[in-house]
Image: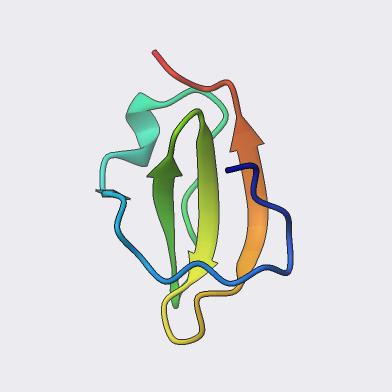
Length: 60
């Protein structure tokens, strides 16, 4: 699936705790987390699942 900003993501893929290990990722703001879905990294709000940023092609 190709995700877009503004969509809601409700889980199933692993969270990224070591975001520094992936080129292009940055520290998530408070209340957000990075999630890896296929070849996309999604910055999602923990409370709502709203996607605020997408970074593609950052696989190492």
